[in-house]
Length: 105
Image 1 (spheres, rainbow, N blue to C red):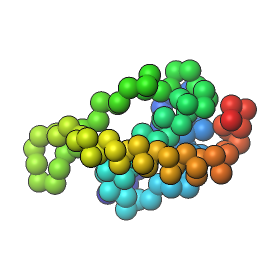
Image 2 (spheres, rainbow, N blue to C red):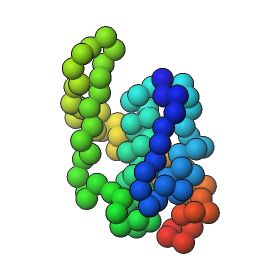
Image 3 (cartoon, rainbow, N blue to C red):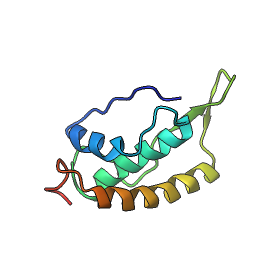
Image 4 (tube, helix red, strand yellow):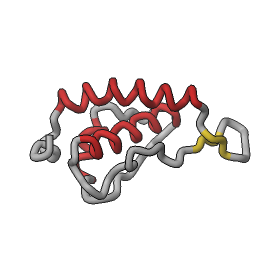
């Protein structure tokens, strides 16, 4: 469960607006990772901030599974899910068009 989160960087206001309609306190870590990845990628692809983005690469993302002591790398299946989620979130982000992102979209 993700009870709180923070956004850093010069696109902070835009990112918060993009995420606030989709973030729920009872989200699983994997769901929050998909949302976060999607917001970062969206900000990069829409050129909202030159300092935010992944440079077309996959982010360094790992999960700590329940009752495990070591992080695990994401599988190809996870990345496929991230891509699917991004396309769904992109449609949502385009539809809400936050005012703090308007000048760029």
